Figure (cartoon, rainbow, N blue to C red):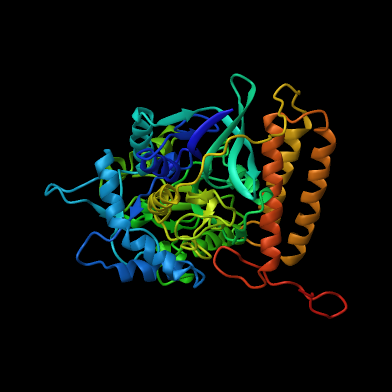
Length: 510
């Protein structure tokens, strides 16, 4: 049995911020499902929103966030985050993050969809990667931080109605570990892998949310999943590469297969409209034109601009034969960001004593029905710091012992697991994706339950890691579908297509 003051599940910007802040007051274990660097943060291209110019104001940033969230944001949480954004940027700089700047040493500020001002701090088009590298290095070098890579968290350990530890499985040593702590922090990211098309890495399977749900934590707003409108369309690749919204902020335009712009017909801000609007518009036009993709036109940008300012995007496109200065870039929508999650307060506290949640796994209320671009990395820093300050101030007692169920890593992985996973992802994309109907959601609910029973049958002999991961995916899918069924009107990331009137002439009862 291992003992720490704090256990952090996840090593993205939110988890590492908590760890580095809390490490000044106790021993911290950072548990990584894969390597320390394999996180959603690493794939974040755009940047971090913060009010840093005289032309801008906290009030403008707040209002942009509220508008993008379709009126469902927690305004107090939004103001809490926005007002702490400048100091968060300063803290990241102190850690060693070198944001792009001008010759006069001022920070360069970009523009993204939904923002009325230039306020996006960035490192070219790989901001998340740069932040991940800096904070990861700091965590490895800190004497009070222990990094446990390739450890899967299976279950939160409860005692006296409080969370006091976690059950882990060391994937390399193939042995179970019970880790106790004064407080446990979920920083496990989102659950994009419940969808067939997603920009999320393969580890984003909703593990933290599923464990929190089983522990009795309150879950909120899971019907609001944000679909990014511009993922690179590349049928030859299993991975989905994101084309940052910052490219549209620099002047690139969404166009039809014949090169005609169309977004002005959907929103006054055109290609820089909020993401839910743009994703639905792209999805609709693809259907209208029977096209597998639409296109992003960056040809009108100054010569060399994409290559200089978006090198990751430029070189990725070039590797598949697309030159941004000459060719249209093929794009499709993909599941991108989980706006809901484990409900928390301004200190990252969940409804379960001793359990915190920060980053994408948490529902702080700042995103409402749709996240404003570049508020996610900001949220991770702000609430990661707030949660650490609160956890340290509580002076929780160290648990002495706890009873944990046995785990095995020896059972063979049933071959049917892959087919269950792919069927789940396909049905979620088709029936609980960008466009939804009440009938499809009911069908999806029943099909997910059937897949759960199928998994129980084939996994009766043991519980190797892939089984636990698939159980988590099915749990999150079921939670998401139920949340969709509970939201009766289209709003933000939850879009209900007009329902047909049944044959008997009666409207479907909600």
